[in-house]
Image (cartoon, rainbow, N blue to C red):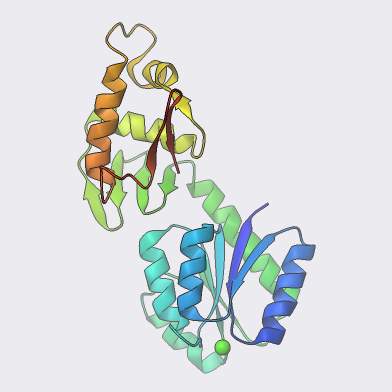
Amino acid sequence: MAKVLIVEDESVLLDLLTRHLESEGYTVVTASRGDDGLEVARREMPDICVLDVMLPGLDGLSLCRILRRESDMPIILLTARAGEVDRVIGLDNGADDYVVKPFSLPELTARIRAALRRTSKRSDNQLQVGDIRLDIAARRAYRGDKELKLSHKEFELLATLMRNKGAVLSREYLISQVWGYDFDGDMRTVDVHVRWLREKIEEDPSNPRHLQTVRGVGYRID
Ligand code: CA
């Protein structure tokens, strides 16, 4: 079941939302300040975010813009007044939807469900790990806003790892997926391509955050 991040500073509402969404089967992570929300989002990698607009620390719209640069997850804004709606919609903040307070719990749940349905449709063509994003159909790769120039094999290797996010893949498996079963070259070809990929996708290629070596087994992206 999906993981929902709720960022809301009214503790009574936060408790109510948490209990309701948990009873619907969601995993819920929470924050009551905008800056904490950003930290929790980066750490927990939720599938969807529900953000209050008026928050201490970092306001909901700013938080929304930062999260949008880093992730494709749907973001639903909670606005306090109908008058805020113009501002919420008018600004290009990257939110997918908004709900005006006071709202009913079934209404919010329905919006969450709809937003998650929309992403699962587009996720076939979009792969994401941290700030690295692949558009499979367009064969484009991005880190944050920046497009990455990847060779054909680098793209295939990254796509294979990202489709199996979190799993350790052996060199043999990667060779079969990326180079084909009839490849009769050196297994070290994989290591060389991993090194090239790290140069492009990692902030610090010698200390990789995403593309990990699992000694004696293979590689994993996380
Ligand atoms: Ca608030």
